[in-house]
Length: 595
Image 1 (spheres, rainbow, N blue to C red):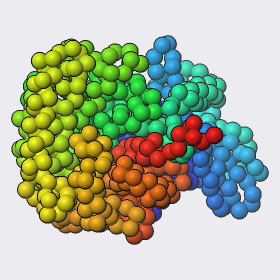
Image 2: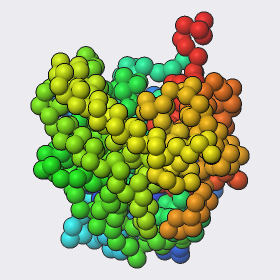
Image 3: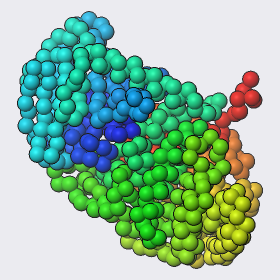
Image 4: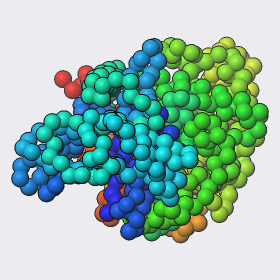
């Protein structure tokens, strides 16, 4: 049965998910939103036994252990049999500096080493194309195997017998072997020498990257793993950041809440770059700023979509994939996301928030300029005109639109930050303009979204429902933490939306009924809000609980079942890993106080 006890490897071009027994169960080529050539994760019916995977199987298997090499995205899995024999599998996607640029090919390297006894193994490589619908044509060479279709071609190059791969032959592993899988290009050097060189360079890259992170004193390992995971979800070629590596892992069992998250939501990407900025990893922001520049230029002054493709694609047509049964057989499987056609007015604040640091951070190689500011002003004008108009909101309701309070606050945020940027640039007239706009929007929000009789802000103008995005009002600077209205909102939300140690995003019925699982980032928002209003001990208790819900490799998905603690939803979810980083940074004791 499929689970989310998975590790991720990647190199900011593509990624693969690997289960506890070293089977690659999900990987898309040539990039995050491409064809899942390994798709076993989503073929939960009988076909799942024969659909796309890349496994290393051990005879008389007993148990496995799995870990990342310290401060890297290199995954090791050790399989042990009932006779005491063991085989270690090291998996990674090469990433390192080469010729003054990053080398990040569509490639994974698997190194198999007998570490105890005489393990008897077999290699099963069964890619599928067309979302699991097409079997490849297989052609064997002297040291490689090609898997091809009309649209896709993969090549496995190896120093083991290729016939053992194609015939799935059991054999005793007496010495290390290497498997290099990638696009259909011949390898120009020795297989083991290439693997060793790529391993050493990739190890050096990740450990050097981590070395310069500004991490908190406490929960360092958790924060480092979260940061590496966020980096793996960055499509460095364009600067875009995917929300997750998967599609259609349901938010709850048999809920139909199955969505494709392999795209760049402007809102989610802001939270990612903000978290990485706090850790000192500024290159991702600079790359994302380039992505945003291209999005805004292509919009030609028109309203922006909430989500785009990783290479700036605007049209993300949603379709059902009949060739895959779904996670644990729980369809549907979707490719594409119809949310691209929605109005979500918070996107303008998300973009401007993400770009604000360009004007204030002296570390950046390409700081913000007057030209950047002029471009952001175009978005500010749309925000100022949209704050009181209905939209689908942060939760992307498909069946209704309202004037959502969070969207309005984000429009206020857009104007507020433009005023601050204008002041930094020495533009008094533009500073006054955007300050007046922000103040006017703020007053309308207070008038329309504050309900004194409930002692809380509500999720939409003149409404009565609550949603967890209101926990961000202090974080965004809309209210001070000691403002009684913020304290009242936090109290109301916890009374209505808290389930045990977890937080729901909302409890009202939507297009699929009432939500069943907690939205993980909302729990982190609640933790941060509690800390802000002086309830730090409660916040730390909740934080420790959610850390314990991570899988064995320190990763989180989108949702958690509040009754069982089980992970649900797309994986690994950038929102969730961002929440972990932000809460750890807020709750950790300082380095000075620790000694």
